[in-house]
Length: 194
Image (cartoon, rainbow, N blue to C red; front, side):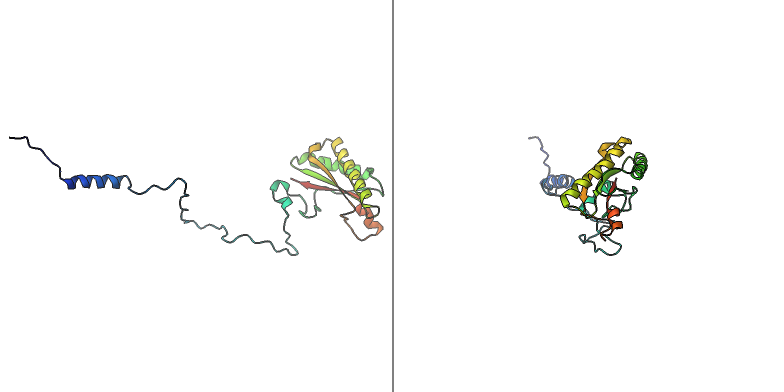
């Protein structure tokens, strides 16, 4: 007599194969080059869904220019004019870049403030009145801003925190053209940023 062979039915083998495929997931794997679908947002986010619109300027709202997009560049005073900062302007005599005693006293106070505010950077702007040529006033404004800078450095303010620029007669504080206006416009202005 021949030995008895045990055969497993084909249906049992097919069933085991289906079970194995189901356990492995059996689904098609996503390609590594395609991004996964975005997760469903179940939170209540306050993010805007519309693109940002330009700001409508008004009497109490002004758009800030690209110069002030970084927090470290925000001025201490008005972001557009730089006025209202912590350091007052110093004044100059007509056709002069020499520091007066009053200007030196004020610069000494500025140096103390700058030493206690180590994150502050200063742009010293040289300004002139409207008399004289454009080139002459630009040169005089540069001399005025450098005189203020050099005195602050002599008082211990680090030179890399100070920058000078001349606007000559191009940005008058008071454009009325009177003798009082000319005196206000002959100045060094301190634009303080963080």
